[in-house]
Structure formats: C-alpha cells, structure tokens
Amino acid sequence: MCRRTVRKGLVLMVAGIISVTLATFFHHQLSTLFFLSGGRSAGLTFYGFALGAASGATGVLVTTAGLLRRNVNDRSVRLLPVVLLLVASIAFFCFLSYLSFTGALTTDPNPGESITI
Image 1 (cartoon, rainbow, N blue to C red):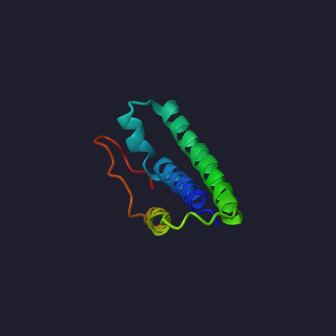
Image 2: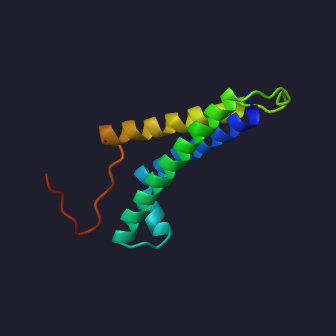
Image 3: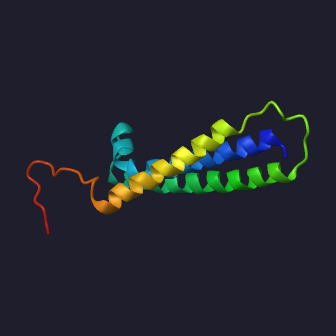
C-alpha cells in the first residue's frame, strides 16, 4: 500500500464532499458572498455538484490505485487524520441532511413576504 497516494485520494474525496455540502446547503450564502444573481447562483450550485462529483470520483480512483500499489518506504505517512476528516465531513453532511428533512433549517420570510400553505 502506498500511503501517500492513499492520503492524496482521501483528501480528494474530502474536497468532493465539502464541495457538494457547500453547493447543497450554503448556495445562497455563497451567491451573496460572490454577488451573484439568480441565474449565476444556479450555475454555482451546478458547478459545486460537478466539482464534487469529479473530485470524489478521482479520489476513489487514486485511493484504489494507492491501495493496490506496493511501496515499503511510506511508514512515516499518517492516514488517521485524513480518515477522521473524511468521517467528520460525511457526518456533517448527514447532519445537515437530517436538519433539512426535519424542517429545522427553515429561513424566516423577508418583510412583506407571505407564506403559502
């Protein structure tokens, strides 16, 4: 197992999960941060999903290549911090998904807006 390659693949998977998390739950905040209009905000969400999918898929391939490759000089490379970061990012995404399904992430209406039930 080539630990450096596995670590790089895991980092790519973490980047993909973070990208999908930002595109899913924080697209409005990112669009206001970058001063984007409605159409550009939808594009930001699309590019977040595309970047997350590409990065995650590349991370899986790189990690698999690192697991199949044989290298004996990688004992100093630590995988535990990256694995913990991967588990934490997955747990954060699942937590935000749970909050969105239960309705805890609702936003307050702007002044003058009506609520349609």
